[in-house]
Amino acid sequence: MIELKPDMKTVVGEPKLIFQKVGKAEGTGFEGHEFFEASSIRKINDTYYFIYSSINGHELCYATSKSPTGGFVYGGTIISNGDLYINGCSSDRDAYNYIGNNHGSIVEVEGKWYVFYHRQTNRHHYSRQALAEPIEIKEDGSIPQVELTSSGLNNGPLKGTGEYEARIACHLMSANGAGRYGVYFGNITFKNHPYFTQSGKDRENNPTQYIANMRDGSIAGFKYFMISDLQGISVCVRGNASGYMLVSTGLYSEPIAKVRIEPSKVFTCINSGINIKNGRQALYFTYKGSGKLDFKSFVLS
Image 1 (cartoon, rainbow, N blue to C red):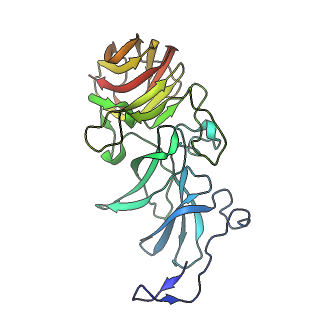
Image 2 (image 1 turned 60 degrees about the horizontal axis):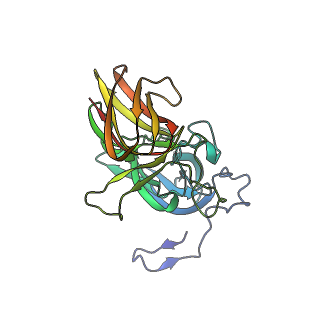
Image 3 (image 1 turned 90 degrees about the vertical axis):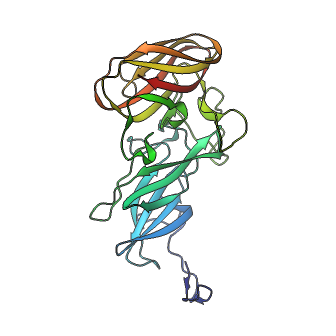
């Protein structure tokens, strides 16, 4: 860092290193979460929050100090775009969503704080989908890691009725787990893995986004919905798939609905009854069968 005079042009003193690089951070408290890039500072009350992307890539971390010129203490992970750490795991394969680099920061909107970040689409880390989650800044100044959800800026569960696009899934993985996109972390082949994509070029108007390439054991998870007397569910899919879409309220939990899937060249909505309790619920869709399918949306009725 380097301090500027009030004219915002003239520097005061010499540049000062406020974080040690990888391999030089022993004893600093930043070990394993050293600074990599994408930094910004927010002042909240009398504390400066240094938000950054760590060497792990998939996480946004924070450090705090009473001064912007140094003395920062590592605080923790705010969010991981694979829900790592918060799920008790740290390896790429154990991520609940395909991971890659992550950039963003925290912003106050109408008295509430949010973390804005991104994840990857189209099976590489250069295509990115912007996301946001509400965060809590505790009285002691700490920020607990928040989980990925499909609710975003909704400030609570989504309504338990209506149509929802599959692209808002917060969790996505194959039968063999997920993995990391990017050129820096090995050569993983994602040919048999599901992924977020769209038809045609990227565009702001009338996008047609969906989850592609769901094969046997692929899982798409959505959090959360406020369920009230839900009677039926339908999934809108296409592909050469033949099998079932199993719906549950938790990862690897018992199905509460079973939707028969048959081959179709166009997106087709298929209905099923559902047995689900009222209240705040997650929905997980697991494909079991042969072939592969594209998952466009589902309808709660």
